[in-house]
Image (cartoon, rainbow, N blue to C red; front, side, top):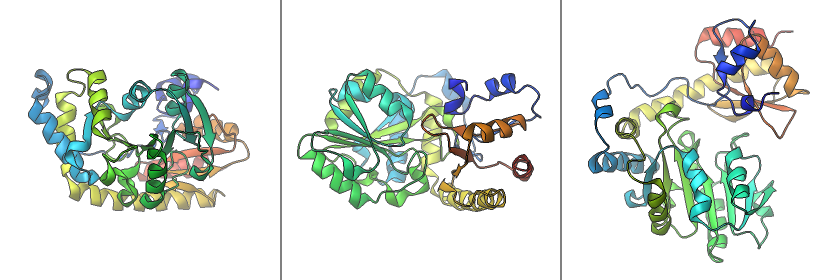
Amino acid sequence: MIQEFLHGGAADLMRKVFSSAPEPWIDLSTGVNPWAYPTAGLDVSDLRRLPTANAYAACRSAMALTFGAQEEAVLVGPGSELLIRLLPTVIAPRNVAILSPAYGSHADVWTAAGSQVTAVDSPLDVSSEVDVLVLCNPGYADGKLYTPETLERLRSRLATRNGWLIVDEAYADLSPQASLAPRGGSDGLIVLRSAGKFFGLPGARLGALIAPPQIRAAMVERLGAWPVSSLALSIGRQAYSDLGWQMETRRRLGRACRRLDRILSDAGFASACGTSLYRVIETPSATKTWSRLARRGIYVRRFPWTEHHLRIGLPPDPEAEDRLMQAFTP
């Protein structure tokens, strides 16, 4: 197995390795909305000028509107990946617990920073020695949701010993009622958001950190001048202000997810879980199922921690749905 495949999105490598697979490839590996926020009317002249303070403020205001957060608590950044990688430089390395399974970069960056990193299966398993707890809500691989009340109790417990709860909300636009963003700015709480998944714009490299003032100030210092492009700020302002598009998109994704569930059920995978952007199936051999789909030009997500699960994103059109159904046929 080539390591680059495990993250998803490596369609160019898939074409090289599975060169006899039918075209076009269907990339269902990333969990990204296949019906991205429309960008046809954007002013590309933004690319000819540096980002302005007004453009930054407008994007931040729109984000705060969608998040239900206090505007001053929101820091706009160049995607959540870089923010994740900078966090260990903002919070001194310490005992870190990561709710498993999680986005792989979390464990990587804290381990590289010299922290003692422990994987836990439940936030209730966190010992009193842990002072940073990292979790994804909804769950990165299974879509599991924790209520704001449950997470608030964890935050309060950690904050009493100067610890931190870090919540990666990359998929929270699907379930805004579960977000801790409205509590952003509270002691001991850092929330990460991404425009890539729900809005279908991972190439925009746009995200946000919602945190207390000292964390935001330290992050601003590390990001330096103009960390987010003028075009990305313009996209963010429009997309996060468009509440109507967001509501209709949740409905559309829900319908598409139900269609995918029927395909998976007909193929014998009745216990699918996940979010409305992806489903997770259990299979006796993830490698064999993944390879069989790849030979038929369909790229789905493997995980390094399991040989029995695959993540499958939403097919973008009826033709892709038909090909997925046929690919599961022996």
